[in-house]
Amino acid sequence: MGQPQAEPVWKKVLTIVALAATVLAIYLQAFERGARREEARLAAVRLEEAIARSRARLRTEIVAELRAELRRESAAAPSGSKPVPDTVLRRLETGATGQALGAFQPDEAQVLANLNESVESLSREVEEADNALRRDLEELRAATLREEEVSSRIMILLTVALACLIGRLLPSLRPGGHGVRQEREDGLS
Amino acid sequence: MSPVMRRALFILLVLSLVGSLAQAQVPTSNVIYRVLRIRTSTETGSAFTIEVDGKQYLITARHLLEGFGGEGDVDLWLDGRWSRLHVRALYPAKESVDIAALDAGRSLTVDFPLDASSVGLTLGQQVYFLGYPFGLSTPGAPGAPVPPGFGEIPFVKGGIVSALDSRDPEANLLYLDGHNNPGFSGGPIVFWHAESRRFRVAGVVRGYRNEALPVIKKKDLDNPRAQAHNDLYTRANSGIVIGYDIRHIVEAIRLSTRASAPPAP
Image (cartoon, rainbow over all chains, first blue to last red):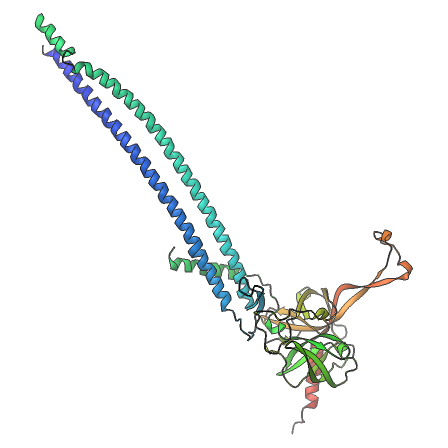
Protein backbone atom coordinates (compact mmCIF):
# COMPACT_ATOMS: atom_id res chain seq x y z
CA MET A 1 0.00 0.00 0.00
CA GLY A 2 1.80 3.26 0.99
CA GLN A 3 3.21 4.86 -2.13
CA PRO A 4 0.70 3.59 -4.71
CA GLN A 5 -2.25 4.79 -2.47
CA ALA A 6 -0.82 8.37 -1.87
CA GLU A 7 -1.07 9.43 -5.52
CA PRO A 8 -4.83 8.98 -5.94
CA VAL A 9 -5.49 10.92 -2.71
CA TRP A 10 -3.23 13.73 -3.85
CA LYS A 11 -4.93 13.74 -7.21
CA LYS A 12 -8.31 13.64 -5.56
CA VAL A 13 -7.49 16.62 -3.38
CA LEU A 14 -6.22 18.56 -6.38
CA THR A 15 -9.26 17.67 -8.41
CA ILE A 16 -11.56 18.69 -5.56
CA VAL A 17 -9.70 21.99 -5.20
CA ALA A 18 -9.93 22.60 -8.99
CA LEU A 19 -13.60 21.67 -8.86
CA ALA A 20 -14.27 24.02 -5.98
CA ALA A 21 -12.33 26.84 -7.71
CA THR A 22 -14.26 26.31 -10.96
CA VAL A 23 -17.59 26.26 -9.15
CA LEU A 24 -16.58 29.38 -7.28
CA ALA A 25 -15.47 31.07 -10.54
CA ILE A 26 -18.75 30.16 -12.22
CA TYR A 27 -20.68 31.44 -9.23
CA LEU A 28 -18.70 34.66 -9.11
CA GLN A 29 -18.93 35.13 -12.86
CA ALA A 30 -22.67 34.59 -12.83
CA PHE A 31 -23.15 36.79 -9.80
CA GLU A 32 -20.84 39.54 -11.04
CA ARG A 33 -22.44 39.55 -14.48
CA GLY A 34 -25.85 39.97 -12.94
CA ALA A 35 -24.55 42.67 -10.63
CA ARG A 36 -22.79 44.47 -13.47
CA ARG A 37 -25.88 44.27 -15.64
CA GLU A 38 -27.99 45.65 -12.83
CA GLU A 39 -25.42 48.33 -12.12
CA ALA A 40 -25.27 49.35 -15.78
CA ARG A 41 -29.05 49.45 -15.91
CA LEU A 42 -29.22 51.60 -12.80
CA ALA A 43 -26.42 53.86 -14.10
CA ALA A 44 -28.25 54.29 -17.39
CA VAL A 45 -31.45 55.13 -15.54
CA ARG A 46 -29.60 57.59 -13.32
CA LEU A 47 -27.93 59.19 -16.33
CA GLU A 48 -31.23 59.46 -18.17
CA GLU A 49 -32.80 61.03 -15.12
CA ALA A 50 -29.88 63.43 -14.74
CA ILE A 51 -30.14 64.46 -18.39
CA ALA A 52 -33.89 64.90 -18.09
CA ARG A 53 -33.47 66.90 -14.89
CA SER A 54 -30.75 69.11 -16.33
CA ARG A 55 -32.78 69.72 -19.47
CA ALA A 56 -35.88 70.48 -17.46
CA ARG A 57 -33.89 72.82 -15.23
CA LEU A 58 -32.33 74.48 -18.21
CA ARG A 59 -35.68 75.07 -19.82
CA THR A 60 -37.76 75.79 -16.82
CA GLU A 61 -35.26 77.56 -14.65
CA ILE A 62 -32.13 78.92 -16.27
CA VAL A 63 -33.45 79.96 -19.67
CA ALA A 64 -36.75 80.95 -18.15
CA GLU A 65 -34.90 83.00 -15.56
CA LEU A 66 -32.79 84.70 -18.21
CA ARG A 67 -35.91 85.40 -20.24
CA ALA A 68 -37.64 86.70 -17.14
CA GLU A 69 -34.67 89.00 -16.57
CA LEU A 70 -35.05 90.17 -20.15
CA ARG A 71 -38.73 90.79 -19.63
CA ARG A 72 -38.04 92.60 -16.38
CA GLU A 73 -35.50 94.76 -18.17
CA SER A 74 -38.06 95.44 -20.90
CA ALA A 75 -40.78 96.19 -18.39
CA ALA A 76 -38.43 98.48 -16.51
CA ALA A 77 -38.36 100.76 -19.52
CA PRO A 78 -40.65 103.72 -19.11
CA SER A 79 -43.96 102.95 -20.72
CA GLY A 80 -46.09 105.68 -19.33
CA SER A 81 -47.02 108.89 -21.07
CA LYS A 82 -43.92 110.71 -19.91
CA PRO A 83 -41.10 110.57 -22.44
CA VAL A 84 -37.50 110.24 -21.33
CA PRO A 85 -34.47 111.76 -23.06
CA ASP A 86 -31.96 109.66 -24.95
CA THR A 87 -34.35 106.80 -25.56
CA VAL A 88 -35.16 105.06 -28.81
CA LEU A 89 -38.51 103.70 -29.87
CA ARG A 90 -38.46 99.96 -30.29
CA ARG A 91 -41.18 97.43 -30.95
CA LEU A 92 -41.65 95.28 -27.86
CA GLU A 93 -40.95 91.56 -28.02
CA THR A 94 -44.20 90.55 -26.34
CA GLY A 95 -47.14 92.16 -24.68
CA ALA A 96 -50.86 92.34 -24.71
CA THR A 97 -50.83 95.23 -27.11
CA GLY A 98 -48.91 93.18 -29.65
CA GLN A 99 -47.64 95.98 -31.82
CA ALA A 100 -46.66 98.32 -29.02
CA LEU A 101 -43.60 100.50 -29.10
CA GLY A 102 -41.44 100.87 -26.06
CA ALA A 103 -38.84 103.44 -25.10
CA PHE A 104 -35.35 102.11 -24.43
CA GLN A 105 -31.90 103.48 -23.91
CA PRO A 106 -30.11 102.73 -27.21
CA ASP A 107 -27.38 100.66 -25.54
CA GLU A 108 -29.91 98.88 -23.43
CA ALA A 109 -31.99 98.02 -26.48
CA GLN A 110 -28.92 96.65 -28.20
CA VAL A 111 -27.91 94.69 -25.11
CA LEU A 112 -31.37 93.19 -24.80
CA ALA A 113 -31.43 92.18 -28.45
CA ASN A 114 -27.97 90.61 -28.21
CA LEU A 115 -28.76 88.98 -24.91
CA ASN A 116 -31.87 87.42 -26.34
CA GLU A 117 -29.80 86.04 -29.17
CA SER A 118 -27.25 84.69 -26.69
CA VAL A 119 -29.90 82.95 -24.64
CA GLU A 120 -31.08 81.23 -27.80
CA SER A 121 -27.51 80.30 -28.62
CA LEU A 122 -26.91 79.00 -25.08
CA SER A 123 -30.04 76.90 -25.31
CA ARG A 124 -28.85 75.42 -28.61
CA GLU A 125 -25.40 74.67 -27.19
CA VAL A 126 -26.85 72.91 -24.18
CA GLU A 127 -29.07 70.89 -26.50
CA GLU A 128 -25.98 69.86 -28.45
CA ALA A 129 -24.15 68.93 -25.22
CA ASP A 130 -27.18 66.93 -24.24
CA ASN A 131 -27.04 65.01 -27.51
CA ALA A 132 -23.30 64.38 -27.02
CA LEU A 133 -24.06 62.99 -23.57
CA ARG A 134 -26.65 60.69 -25.11
CA ARG A 135 -24.11 59.46 -27.62
CA ASP A 136 -21.68 58.72 -24.77
CA LEU A 137 -24.39 56.80 -22.99
CA GLU A 138 -25.03 54.70 -26.09
CA GLU A 139 -21.31 53.94 -26.36
CA LEU A 140 -21.24 52.95 -22.70
CA ARG A 141 -24.13 50.59 -23.29
CA ALA A 142 -22.38 49.08 -26.29
CA ALA A 143 -19.21 48.52 -24.21
CA THR A 144 -21.27 46.86 -21.47
CA LEU A 145 -22.87 44.56 -24.03
CA ARG A 146 -19.44 43.60 -25.37
CA GLU A 147 -18.25 42.80 -21.83
CA GLU A 148 -21.34 40.69 -21.25
CA GLU A 149 -20.64 38.76 -24.40
CA VAL A 150 -17.07 38.00 -23.28
CA SER A 151 -18.36 37.07 -19.87
CA SER A 152 -20.84 34.63 -21.44
CA ARG A 153 -18.03 32.94 -23.35
CA ILE A 154 -15.97 32.62 -20.15
CA MET A 155 -18.99 31.10 -18.44
CA ILE A 156 -19.32 28.53 -21.21
CA LEU A 157 -15.63 27.62 -20.97
CA LEU A 158 -15.83 27.37 -17.18
CA THR A 159 -18.89 25.16 -17.43
CA VAL A 160 -17.04 22.87 -19.87
CA ALA A 161 -14.08 22.78 -17.48
CA LEU A 162 -16.39 22.00 -14.58
CA ALA A 163 -18.05 19.19 -16.50
CA CYS A 164 -14.64 17.72 -17.33
CA LEU A 165 -13.55 17.93 -13.70
CA ILE A 166 -16.75 16.30 -12.47
CA GLY A 167 -16.29 13.63 -15.10
CA ARG A 168 -12.76 13.09 -13.85
CA LEU A 169 -13.69 13.10 -10.16
CA LEU A 170 -16.90 11.02 -10.11
CA PRO A 171 -15.32 7.62 -10.96
CA SER A 172 -12.75 8.01 -8.20
CA LEU A 173 -15.41 8.85 -5.61
CA ARG A 174 -17.57 5.76 -6.39
CA PRO A 175 -17.30 2.96 -3.71
CA GLY A 176 -16.08 0.51 -6.36
CA GLY A 177 -13.78 3.06 -7.77
CA HIS A 178 -10.15 2.96 -8.76
CA GLY A 179 -8.72 3.23 -5.17
CA VAL A 180 -10.81 0.42 -3.65
CA ARG A 181 -10.16 -1.80 -6.65
CA GLN A 182 -6.45 -1.15 -6.16
CA GLU A 183 -6.70 -2.16 -2.49
CA ARG A 184 -8.51 -5.38 -3.40
CA GLU A 185 -5.92 -6.14 -6.00
CA ASP A 186 -3.25 -5.47 -3.38
CA GLY A 187 -4.99 -7.80 -0.87
CA LEU A 188 -5.24 -10.63 -3.33
CA SER A 189 -1.63 -10.67 -4.20
CA MET B 1 -26.15 75.40 -11.14
CA SER B 2 -26.50 77.54 -8.06
CA PRO B 3 -28.36 80.87 -8.14
CA VAL B 4 -25.04 82.65 -7.63
CA MET B 5 -23.55 80.93 -10.66
CA ARG B 6 -26.64 81.67 -12.74
CA ARG B 7 -26.41 85.29 -11.75
CA ALA B 8 -22.71 85.30 -12.60
CA LEU B 9 -23.47 83.73 -15.99
CA PHE B 10 -26.07 86.38 -16.69
CA ILE B 11 -23.72 89.19 -15.71
CA LEU B 12 -20.93 87.70 -17.81
CA LEU B 13 -23.25 87.48 -20.77
CA VAL B 14 -24.30 91.08 -20.37
CA LEU B 15 -20.73 92.27 -19.94
CA SER B 16 -19.50 90.40 -22.99
CA LEU B 17 -22.34 91.79 -25.03
CA VAL B 18 -21.85 95.32 -23.82
CA GLY B 19 -18.23 95.02 -24.86
CA SER B 20 -19.17 93.99 -28.36
CA LEU B 21 -21.84 96.58 -28.84
CA ALA B 22 -22.05 98.02 -32.29
CA GLN B 23 -22.01 101.78 -32.33
CA ALA B 24 -25.07 101.97 -34.57
CA GLN B 25 -27.20 104.82 -33.28
CA VAL B 26 -30.74 105.57 -34.24
CA PRO B 27 -32.54 108.84 -33.59
CA THR B 28 -33.61 109.18 -30.00
CA SER B 29 -36.50 110.88 -28.26
CA ASN B 30 -34.35 114.01 -28.22
CA VAL B 31 -34.91 114.23 -31.98
CA ILE B 32 -38.17 112.38 -32.61
CA TYR B 33 -40.33 114.33 -30.18
CA ARG B 34 -39.20 117.64 -31.57
CA VAL B 35 -40.53 117.06 -35.07
CA LEU B 36 -43.97 118.38 -35.96
CA ARG B 37 -46.16 118.55 -39.02
CA ILE B 38 -46.79 122.09 -40.21
CA ARG B 39 -49.39 123.57 -42.52
CA THR B 40 -49.24 127.06 -43.95
CA SER B 41 -51.57 128.86 -46.29
CA THR B 42 -49.65 127.46 -49.24
CA GLU B 43 -48.06 124.15 -48.27
CA THR B 44 -47.76 121.31 -45.80
CA GLY B 45 -44.42 120.05 -44.60
CA SER B 46 -42.29 119.38 -41.56
CA ALA B 47 -40.83 121.47 -38.76
CA PHE B 48 -38.80 120.89 -35.63
CA THR B 49 -37.73 122.73 -32.53
CA ILE B 50 -34.34 123.83 -31.29
CA GLU B 51 -33.24 125.97 -28.39
CA VAL B 52 -31.13 129.02 -29.02
CA ASP B 53 -29.83 130.74 -25.90
CA GLY B 54 -32.44 129.02 -23.78
CA LYS B 55 -35.45 129.86 -25.94
CA GLN B 56 -37.27 127.38 -28.16
CA TYR B 57 -37.90 128.12 -31.85
CA LEU B 58 -39.74 126.17 -34.49
CA ILE B 59 -37.57 125.65 -37.56
CA THR B 60 -38.93 124.85 -40.99
CA ALA B 61 -38.24 125.42 -44.68
CA ARG B 62 -38.58 128.95 -45.91
CA HIS B 63 -40.36 127.91 -49.07
CA LEU B 64 -43.28 126.65 -46.99
CA LEU B 65 -43.84 130.22 -45.82
CA GLU B 66 -44.17 131.84 -49.20
CA GLY B 67 -45.75 135.26 -48.77
CA PHE B 68 -45.89 134.81 -45.02
CA GLY B 69 -43.91 137.90 -44.11
CA GLY B 70 -42.71 138.60 -40.59
CA GLU B 71 -45.74 137.45 -38.62
CA GLY B 72 -48.82 135.32 -39.07
CA ASP B 73 -50.61 132.06 -38.36
CA VAL B 74 -49.51 128.52 -39.05
CA ASP B 75 -51.17 125.23 -38.23
CA LEU B 76 -49.40 122.49 -36.31
CA TRP B 77 -50.65 118.91 -36.01
CA LEU B 78 -50.83 118.54 -32.23
CA ASP B 79 -52.73 116.00 -30.20
CA GLY B 80 -54.54 114.59 -33.21
CA ARG B 81 -55.76 117.82 -34.76
CA TRP B 82 -54.57 120.97 -36.46
CA SER B 83 -53.91 123.74 -33.97
CA ARG B 84 -53.54 127.32 -35.12
CA LEU B 85 -50.58 129.21 -33.79
CA HIS B 86 -49.61 132.83 -34.12
CA VAL B 87 -45.88 133.13 -34.76
CA ARG B 88 -43.20 135.61 -35.61
CA ALA B 89 -40.92 134.55 -38.45
CA LEU B 90 -37.17 135.02 -38.65
CA TYR B 91 -35.12 134.40 -41.76
CA PRO B 92 -31.42 134.15 -42.60
CA ALA B 93 -29.92 137.15 -44.29
CA LYS B 94 -29.49 135.39 -47.59
CA GLU B 95 -32.81 134.76 -49.26
CA SER B 96 -31.68 131.59 -51.02
CA VAL B 97 -31.14 129.83 -47.70
CA ASP B 98 -34.28 127.76 -47.40
CA ILE B 99 -34.73 127.94 -43.63
CA ALA B 100 -37.03 129.93 -41.38
CA ALA B 101 -37.48 130.14 -37.63
CA LEU B 102 -40.88 130.68 -36.04
CA ASP B 103 -41.13 132.18 -32.60
CA ALA B 104 -44.36 131.13 -30.88
CA GLY B 105 -43.39 132.77 -27.61
CA ARG B 106 -43.52 129.42 -25.82
CA SER B 107 -42.13 125.92 -25.98
CA LEU B 108 -43.95 123.60 -28.33
CA THR B 109 -42.14 120.31 -27.73
CA VAL B 110 -39.79 118.61 -25.31
CA ASP B 111 -36.50 120.34 -24.74
CA PHE B 112 -34.29 117.26 -24.47
CA PRO B 113 -30.66 118.03 -25.34
CA LEU B 114 -30.15 118.54 -29.07
CA ASP B 115 -27.36 120.76 -30.32
CA ALA B 116 -28.07 122.81 -33.42
CA SER B 117 -24.68 122.55 -35.05
CA SER B 118 -23.09 120.81 -37.98
CA VAL B 119 -19.66 120.84 -36.32
CA GLY B 120 -18.31 117.30 -36.42
CA LEU B 121 -20.37 116.25 -39.40
CA THR B 122 -18.17 113.92 -41.43
CA LEU B 123 -18.18 113.25 -45.13
CA GLY B 124 -19.67 109.83 -45.74
CA GLN B 125 -21.26 109.71 -42.31
CA GLN B 126 -24.66 108.20 -41.72
CA VAL B 127 -27.32 110.87 -41.22
CA TYR B 128 -31.08 110.80 -40.70
CA PHE B 129 -33.78 113.13 -41.84
CA LEU B 130 -37.20 113.18 -40.26
CA GLY B 131 -40.55 114.43 -41.42
CA TYR B 132 -44.00 113.60 -42.72
CA PRO B 133 -43.80 112.45 -46.37
CA PHE B 134 -47.23 112.67 -47.98
CA GLY B 135 -48.53 113.35 -44.45
CA LEU B 136 -47.57 109.84 -43.35
CA SER B 137 -46.28 109.00 -39.85
CA THR B 138 -46.43 106.46 -37.05
CA PRO B 139 -49.83 107.51 -35.79
CA GLY B 140 -50.85 106.98 -32.20
CA ALA B 141 -48.05 104.47 -31.54
CA PRO B 142 -49.48 102.29 -28.77
CA GLY B 143 -47.26 102.01 -25.76
CA ALA B 144 -44.92 104.74 -26.89
CA PRO B 145 -44.45 107.35 -24.20
CA VAL B 146 -45.55 110.26 -26.37
CA PRO B 147 -45.32 113.67 -24.73
CA PRO B 148 -48.62 115.35 -23.94
CA GLY B 149 -49.81 117.48 -26.79
CA PHE B 150 -47.39 115.93 -29.25
CA GLY B 151 -48.47 115.23 -32.81
CA GLU B 152 -47.42 112.01 -34.46
CA ILE B 153 -44.13 110.18 -34.57
CA PRO B 154 -42.43 111.23 -37.79
CA PHE B 155 -40.93 109.13 -40.56
CA VAL B 156 -37.24 108.49 -40.05
CA LYS B 157 -35.23 108.20 -43.24
CA GLY B 158 -31.51 107.94 -43.71
CA GLY B 159 -28.64 108.56 -46.01
CA ILE B 160 -24.99 109.50 -45.99
CA VAL B 161 -23.31 112.85 -46.31
CA SER B 162 -22.29 112.95 -49.95
CA ALA B 163 -20.99 116.49 -50.21
CA LEU B 164 -20.65 119.71 -48.24
CA ASP B 165 -20.71 122.85 -50.33
CA SER B 166 -19.26 125.72 -48.32
CA ARG B 167 -18.22 127.99 -51.19
CA ASP B 168 -20.77 130.58 -50.12
CA PRO B 169 -20.27 131.21 -46.39
CA GLU B 170 -23.78 132.66 -46.24
CA ALA B 171 -25.37 129.57 -47.76
CA ASN B 172 -23.71 126.28 -46.82
CA LEU B 173 -25.29 123.35 -48.58
CA LEU B 174 -25.47 119.74 -47.51
CA TYR B 175 -25.92 116.99 -50.08
CA LEU B 176 -27.06 113.61 -48.89
CA ASP B 177 -27.36 110.32 -50.66
CA GLY B 178 -30.89 109.34 -49.67
CA HIS B 179 -34.40 109.11 -50.98
CA ASN B 180 -36.39 112.15 -50.07
CA ASN B 181 -40.12 112.61 -50.71
CA PRO B 182 -42.54 115.54 -50.74
CA GLY B 183 -43.42 116.39 -47.15
CA PHE B 184 -39.92 116.23 -45.70
CA SER B 185 -39.29 119.89 -46.46
CA GLY B 186 -38.41 121.66 -43.24
CA GLY B 187 -37.45 118.46 -41.44
CA PRO B 188 -34.19 118.15 -39.50
CA ILE B 189 -31.05 116.46 -40.80
CA VAL B 190 -29.43 114.87 -37.75
CA PHE B 191 -26.24 113.00 -37.12
CA TRP B 192 -24.61 111.19 -34.23
CA HIS B 193 -21.87 113.28 -32.69
CA ALA B 194 -19.54 110.73 -31.14
CA GLU B 195 -17.60 113.14 -28.93
CA SER B 196 -20.66 114.47 -27.14
CA ARG B 197 -22.48 111.14 -27.49
CA ARG B 198 -25.57 113.01 -28.63
CA PHE B 199 -27.43 113.71 -31.83
CA ARG B 200 -26.96 117.07 -33.47
CA VAL B 201 -29.05 118.91 -36.01
CA ALA B 202 -26.79 119.65 -38.95
CA GLY B 203 -29.29 121.15 -41.32
CA VAL B 204 -32.80 121.53 -42.66
CA VAL B 205 -34.24 119.57 -45.56
CA ARG B 206 -34.90 121.75 -48.56
CA GLY B 207 -35.85 119.11 -51.09
CA TYR B 208 -34.25 116.77 -53.57
CA ARG B 209 -32.66 117.09 -56.93
CA ASN B 210 -34.77 116.01 -59.83
CA GLU B 211 -33.41 114.61 -63.02
CA ALA B 212 -35.09 114.66 -66.39
CA LEU B 213 -35.60 111.23 -67.82
CA PRO B 214 -36.52 110.94 -71.52
CA VAL B 215 -39.71 109.13 -72.38
CA ILE B 216 -38.71 106.41 -74.82
CA LYS B 217 -40.43 103.64 -76.70
CA LYS B 218 -40.39 100.15 -75.25
CA LYS B 219 -38.16 98.87 -78.01
CA ASP B 220 -35.52 101.44 -77.03
CA LEU B 221 -35.34 100.44 -73.35
CA ASP B 222 -31.91 98.85 -73.75
CA ASN B 223 -30.59 101.50 -76.08
CA PRO B 224 -28.54 104.09 -74.13
CA ARG B 225 -28.55 106.47 -77.12
CA ALA B 226 -32.33 106.49 -77.55
CA GLN B 227 -33.76 109.99 -77.90
CA ALA B 228 -36.81 111.28 -76.04
CA HIS B 229 -39.96 110.39 -77.88
CA ASN B 230 -41.63 113.54 -79.15
CA ASP B 231 -39.30 115.53 -76.87
CA LEU B 232 -41.13 114.21 -73.79
CA TYR B 233 -39.39 114.00 -70.43
CA THR B 234 -40.41 112.94 -66.95
CA ARG B 235 -39.09 114.08 -63.59
CA ALA B 236 -37.33 111.54 -61.42
CA ASN B 237 -35.90 111.68 -57.94
CA SER B 238 -32.12 111.55 -58.35
CA GLY B 239 -31.61 110.35 -54.78
CA ILE B 240 -29.73 113.49 -53.87
CA VAL B 241 -31.22 115.24 -50.85
CA ILE B 242 -30.48 118.94 -50.47
CA GLY B 243 -30.34 120.74 -47.16
CA TYR B 244 -29.00 123.96 -45.67
CA ASP B 245 -26.71 124.24 -42.70
CA ILE B 246 -28.54 124.95 -39.46
CA ARG B 247 -26.02 127.58 -38.43
CA HIS B 248 -27.58 130.12 -40.82
CA ILE B 249 -30.81 130.21 -38.87
CA VAL B 250 -29.05 130.07 -35.49
CA GLU B 251 -27.04 133.14 -36.52
CA ALA B 252 -30.22 134.87 -37.75
CA ILE B 253 -31.97 134.19 -34.43
CA ARG B 254 -29.02 135.51 -32.43
CA LEU B 255 -28.81 138.58 -34.65
CA SER B 256 -32.50 139.22 -34.17
CA THR B 257 -32.24 138.75 -30.40
CA ARG B 258 -29.35 141.18 -30.19
CA ALA B 259 -31.19 143.72 -32.32
CA SER B 260 -34.33 143.58 -30.19
CA ALA B 261 -32.47 143.65 -26.88
CA PRO B 262 -32.67 146.98 -25.03
CA PRO B 263 -29.45 148.98 -25.22
CA ALA B 264 -27.11 148.59 -22.30
CA PRO B 265 -27.28 151.53 -19.88
